[in-house]
Image 1 (cartoon, rainbow, N blue to C red):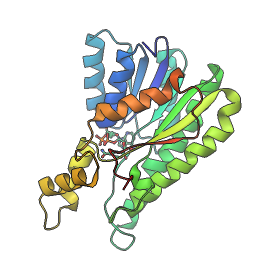
Image 2: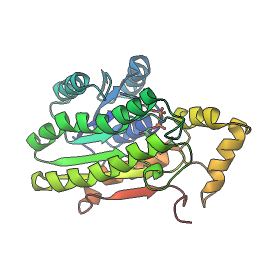
Image 3: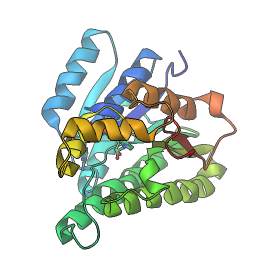
Length: 256
Ligand SMILES: NC(=O)c1ccc[n+]([C@@H]2O[C@H](COP(=O)([O-])OP(=O)(O)OC[C@H]3O[C@@H](n4cnc5c(N)ncnc54)[C@H](O)[C@@H]3O)[C@@H](O)[C@H]2O)c1
């Protein structure tokens, strides 16, 4: 029970990695606010977790919008009675190079993946300071470390998240807040499924999926739970001397 009496806010918590993180935190004793744009999915998950006896709520909105971010943090704090942990996980993936991606796709990619981290942190960090310190974990990507063709906006947004993580670690260490990020490789979630369908070209989505698996040393795509366990580590006291780090969880994708 690493998170007994801890209060966590997980963005994009209704699906994929965020959902696995929310479930892991609940299993380890945390009270959790699940923030998501998809109200139906978030409320369904909350209902499921409440039935298992968890203390959870849904806060619905768009992390890229200033007023939504402020309101969601406010609602989470009102329900939880404070905040110790923020997981900035909400993200989208746009396909395209700088010459093929549309302007509005570039804007939306940066708005959600980068500005969303900034906006949620902006409102959540004062609450974590009020609680006497805690942890922030941002979900970046190996796409922020190495170049993947046709992922220019995504890669740029994730590289920025890695650097923002370091800046936040420097700014809030004095308040007892550790800030780290996780850089996953390919993970079996609806986001990856959608990417496989869109990238395909002359290859089938199954072939693209296999290609992602083959890129890794372990020759498989990760389960969301395998990312959630690393997020839980970074958010817990077991990582008490870890801050400003980018933990690569990619089955060896970037080791070769
Ligand atoms: N799946 C992968 O292979 C992979 C690899 C590396 C990094 N990541 C990162 O992990 C994070 C989670 O991805 P996932 O694969 O679980 O995706 P997913 O699509 O399964 O889940 C993302 C969740 O975020 C929510 N969301 C999207 N935009 C939002 C917004 N503007 N405001 C609030 N909520 C929003 C969605 O409704 C969804 O519930 C993302 O940041 C993604 O970039 C994923």
